[in-house]
Length: 101
Image (tube, rainbow, N blue to C red; front, top):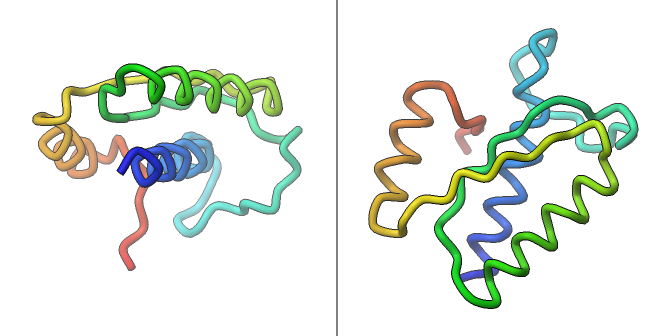
């Protein structure tokens, strides 16, 4: 479950990078873009991890920001019992980038 949540967090992070660009058009993010081109602020909405999972999340964010120095990541951790509500509200408000399948 932690792996799935981590993958979701990374996906939201990558999607948010593309969504934050005010000059972008609707559509998928170019994940093949040179990482040197990435810049801006990203808010990562994630469950409130504890123990080893919290340390792993911090390590993933550090690795991402080390590789993408122009990106600032702000982590918004939410209690597990409030996560669905927060995600639904964020998507409805256009705060979370997502693509329907």
